[in-house]
Length: 604
Image (cartoon, rainbow, N blue to C red):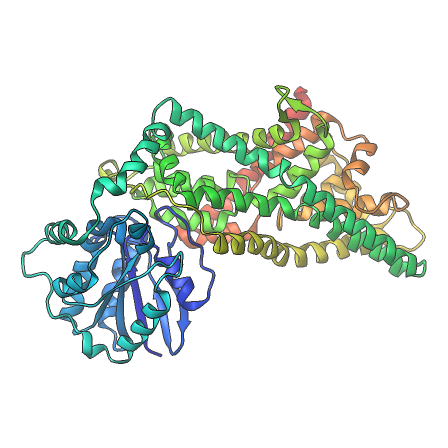
């Protein structure tokens, strides 16, 4: 199959155009470093290859090195029919630096180049225009204007691209950079001749940036944005959670009414509705988290936040670019670790990857939500304004971030670094402020919920069934005298210093496969222990059981710190190339979490 290679600078809309052409749902956002690996999709009879964004063919960060290596290697391949270079119409000069370099390389290899002039809708919005015919003549390769966001001229562009790919010899570059000619100088000339006026592009952006990047107002705005983010996870999701809980309880009641009393009825109530049902209640929070982070990404604010955080993060041995992987880690650690490839310094990149597991990912959300609901009054307020449970959520996320910074400082002092690390520049483009593109954002929100269910539900189902079988047999025994009870009482001394009994110990051990298993396992255990009570209200059952504040706080802090995700360990191993480092972190964070939980229980 012939290939069409997509290249472009970060924030050129390349990933969104890739989605529009292939029908896939690759993540898109309005900040640099979204695409950190090669993505592939199909458009009719051609394979579209989306490469990580890079500013020049002299890559600095790891994602740029991947792009440069792939560009140079792919252009030499016989199955590369066309090189598609995506330009940002609002920032033509910066886009053309890479475009001219790629065109020169393609001409030397007898390959064709097509320029896609993206964001043309923003050019028209401010009353400007770009003469694509004249620009094509100057470049010596065709230029087609479009907007991947509003779909303006997208169909015409797609037809042109497929036509050129079928007959690439018809658009071989007629001119390119001459020997010794600088891409930066030539791109500046072309941008002055054809591009938008910079004062038009930057006028509104600068007025907003004066507020958001100010030392005082910017810091306040940043803290407010983070507080609202974590408040929203609880407050906005509560009605949806109540609806899911009501639905599960209603279905459980109807199923129980038609199911004969016996083993099957107990299995449905305890393992299915008690285990899986207790876990599903918290899925809306994951979707709300994805929505809020998506709004911050698409608006262009995240790059500003990364810039604001560069100086304080540098104190802990990190970079401003560490902010974006850290924030992404609150959704999932796996793509966040991949996003750390954009960090220019190997030393800072490694520290960032090693501390990302301390960010409270979406898998922890069900655990937090359950324990916060148990420990914090639902109708309480913070400062008489904010929801107290939402404030508790913010506190948990803040504790994870502070722990990550402390660990980063320790690692920065303890780990050797290369001499060139001190010379690595911090380069970050501030993207244009844009309204979110709602269609891909909603796809991401819904996808986060369904992906979480697909990933976690099978594990929780197997764990729930296993716990139910061990807790149900021998027949005619109670939970205390069952096989599970005997195992639990054997391991109980390990968890007694945390103020927890054997049921929590079983749930914690099961959750070392995946954190979210804790809720399902506990739901099954409490369902079997209190089978006559309501099926869905796990938090009420735990409150009635008498979990103390000190034990509960220690338990939730345990889950803030512990690395309980085998997939994250595998990703760390793949990115660092060290099996010892990955599993060492797994053990180290587990021991640190245990020490913190024991200390909290003993001190309070």
